[in-house]
Image (cartoon, rainbow, N blue to C red; front, side, top):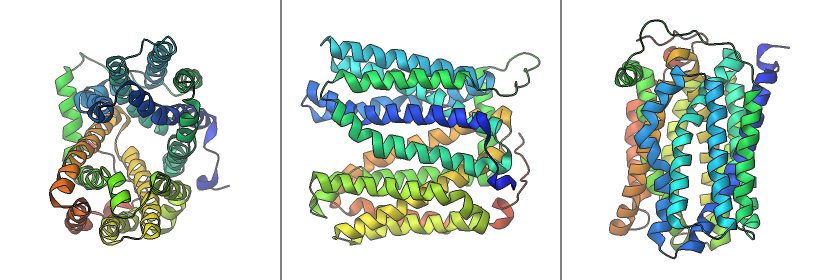
Amino acid sequence: MGARGASLGGGFARLWTASAVSNIGDGVALAAGPLLLASLTADPALVAGAMFVQQLPWLLFALPAGVYVDRLDRRRLVVLVNLVRGLVIGGLAVAIATDVVTVALVYTALFVIGSMETLADNASTALIPAVVAPEQLPRANARMMGVHIVGNQLLAPPLGAALFVVAAVPFTLNAATFVLAALLVATLRVAPRPEPTGPRNPLRRDIATGIRALMGHPVLRMLAVCLCLMNVTLAGAFAILVLYARERLGLDEVGFGVLLAASAVGGLAGSAVAARLQDRFGASLLLRVGLVIETCTHLSLALTTLPWVAVATLVVFGAHAAVWGVITLSWRQRVVPDALRGRVNSGYFLFAIGGSALGALSGGLLARGLGITAPFWIAFAGMAALTAVAWRWFTPARLDDPDPAPLTV
């Protein structure tokens, strides 16, 4: 059996299972959380503010979190963070069951959970190259993305909504999944990382080293800029998707749910074929095609009034997003040395969350002032410009080397 078809190993199986378990819990809470807040307050600003509260730690702590992911034992860090998340969500479930839960308490729990995510998501990503061979990274990342889509976006949210009949139940399940994920990762065996020699650098200097490494590599820098600007345009357009679905497409709540599921279905298909597509066509061609697909996605949604066209567009977009994610993450894992992975990952997370936050803020303002399709037209123009700039960077010489030179600082 060739390397591409070989087993990913028991270590990856444990990491994958832990991810599957925690994604189911997250997906349950994804549906139950807004329902909980809506049961506590009718203020739409307070309900919508929950997403901002959970994302705020990424803007505050992403860069320091990357330093600690590089300094500490990543396996133990994931275990500890999952236990903390389980404790916090378990406490929230108790507060719900005893009828003492408040909006302030929910916000506090979300902020702590978001803070823990800055460590857990980074460390989990950095652990994958420790349990699979470099040539297996696309397959491993595709499987991780697939389980995220199935658990977090397709299966668990309807389950969370159904379980909310007894409000504490979905949060109790979420807490249990975090504890189980911690136990699974605790059994993971990874080679010990070399101990640092000499005095430890100040936190600020280590952060600066990671940012310098990211921004000093031309392809890594361009990928980070692409991620940021793609998220600006995407979040700007999708922040008003519920209004677009109703006013432009004439869809009811069920139709809006189908529209959301379309992207997840496409993402699942994309994650299933991403590694094979990269083997067949190479990273450079697929990333260039991805830029075109993302640009055309916004154009199609700006022009159409037909629900089936919008659904088909989002299926294709979801597939592209999964393929893009698998390729760029696998390439980054191979190029960035182990000692820098946490800090470089944190820079990418900051670009991603910052872009999403800016896009979500601007999308509503554009729609209010210029009409419901304005965010899609602006996104189309922005992506067309980005495609023209990024095209020359995504060449076979830069991206298709089977053994790329590692990043150096």
